[in-house]
Image (cartoon, rainbow, N blue to C red; front, side, top):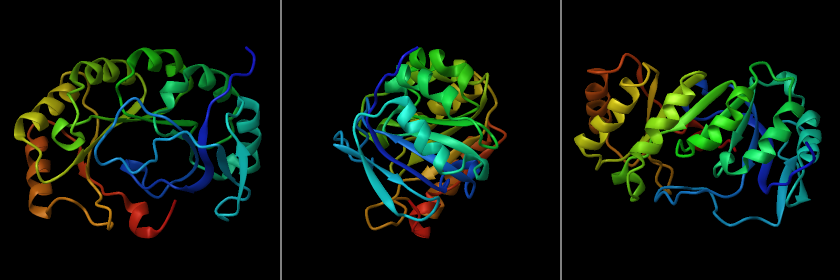
Length: 246
């Protein structure tokens, strides 16, 4: 297939801080670049000159590798972090599906974790998902609410994405704030319910000072509304933020 290249922000070992796998140990491959501009995003948008790589799992002892990297370079660093100790290898970002050709070359090289490949995605690139779908095991898919992202709706893209992704182990994550309109929540619920009965994680937006940007009362009201149509709806904040994890 030949080596393709992609820019990465970091390669490290830590615990998953979001969604149903909170607390599970993962190796994180954080890709640079995204096709969206969410208002609350806490990930730098610029492409870094170097990718920082943790030399030993959990050590926070980093070396720096010049971008872009080849699949073989990334796979070598992953193996040195001992995948066998980890639940899965997380492809995150940014948006990893922007680098589909790279993923097609990389994923076959990074086996050895306990539960395979975990794809974290904004759920707006169904054509790219279709190319790598057979290579991933778990999909953490966002549904973007316009009132929270301050962007135009992505409903058609989300609908097609979840139609494809339901063939895998999948859950949907939805970041919320105090200003979520009922109509937007209902549209997101309809996309999930009309495609597959899969878990929905309601994640309160994290403010810069580390506090949730929504009241407990509002969170419970959103969950109650979702539970009227879905079986599995959970409220899970970004736990790694207050644990001081990467």
